[in-house]
Amino acid sequence: MHTVKAIYPGTFDPLTNGHLDLIARGAKIVDQLVVAILKNSEKGTPLFTVPERVEMITEATRSVGNVSVATFDGLLVDFCKEQGAKAVLRGIRAISDYEYEFQMAMMNRKLDPELETLFMLPAEKYTYVSSRLIKSVFHLGGDVSTLVPPLVVERLKAKAGDHFGRAKTT
Ligand code: PNS
Image (cartoon, rainbow, N blue to C red; front, side, top):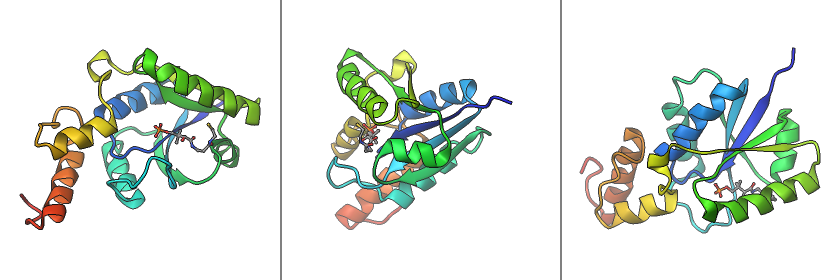
């Protein structure tokens, strides 16, 4: 039987409802979807550790049967090969995402001509949502509770509590 396994790679610092929307869409069209967190991101110091991110994504995707969570290091094409995955799933929110995504997809194709990149569009209500903006708005006191899963809101609050030396429950 012909089954398709795809990797949905990213930093996920933290997971947003935009990511979750894309995971749900991707899981409908591939047989197995692996959400893969890059361990050594070049994006600077992350807010959440890799194990924290694994936990949050695992919890938030628990109800989707064909989704699993993994971590990877090094080249994405090597990880895909290791996993026996034929495709990479990526979301494009707006034209501004396109150039970066195009370059990555083409570089991955250069590195492994057999690997395909699938692009999907998240729901339009999430087109402006990014992990970077979530962190920034949350730290400035804004309400992000409709843009990330409840567990992520809890964890953001706990981090803020740690940071300011307050009780974790505040
Ligand atoms: O959602 P993000 O944080 O923009 O994801 C970026 C990610 C993890 C997909 C990208 O940085 C990646 O694949 N890194 C692994 C290193 C690699 O394979 N680089 C060459 C391909 S451009």
